[in-house]
Length: 335
Image 1 (cartoon, rainbow, N blue to C red):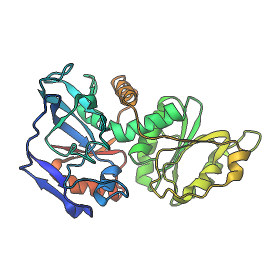
Image 2 (cartoon, rainbow, N blue to C red):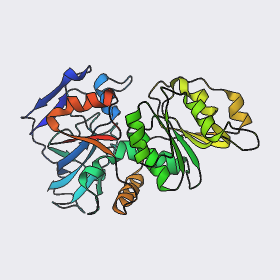
Image 3 (cartoon, one colour):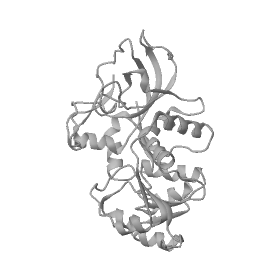
Image 4 (cartoon, rainbow, N blue to C red):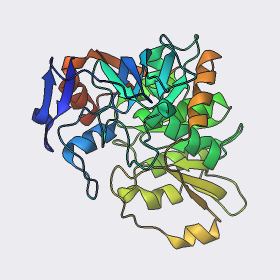
């Protein structure tokens, strides 16, 4: 079987494409799927580089976002049959830690054996490629925006890092429910794509500090409830937190699901209490988020943004595109 192995922690040279990886053999309580597509996430790169406190047995087949078709069904499996189209929810359960494609083999291969609790049926109106793009980025965004953030029609939403997988999803979901979106990214090309996705205002934060741009667009937050945004999405962290606070109106929300630029942030407590800000963390997704997203796709309400589709053997190039931040949306690998 063809697969791509992450053989050690390090740079992209530790990725190894092989044509003779052992075929998966399903246990009685497992199924085997033919993988149609696997989406990349920055989490794959963190796994390759090594994450403090997380022990990973190497080599491992990385890839947590995947969809495919069931080709074998174990003798003790019920409710699933050969030919079923499925999305994989990669979170491990039953006393196991981590995710498929992280602590155990995942989707950068032709086939995978896995427990049925990972499976979510894919509607006929949803392509397997679109389904594969969902879990880590769109699932995380869905929970953060709607379950935790309660974004609704009429809100003005600021999205930092809007061109990445989660950021793009936040832009699309906010527009889907009728919010006004201010999207921040680092190049004219990315901003043009975000504008095409429906962003009402776009900000090149390399040229203009995002705080200044937000104040120019909606005004400074004031105690009479004028100015500022209703919701700020900041999974960047680092040195962006205080400026984010200065963009959010009285009674507004700041949402986060990560800290790509650093988790140690400086906070201005005066803004927290004076403007009665509500800071809400959001961690991952639930199966219900993924099912809801597929319903949106089937109904034509959103379409996952897939920037590029590469063959499996070009996994290193796909990771380079992510690391060099050339991508708007998702990159997929197809066996």
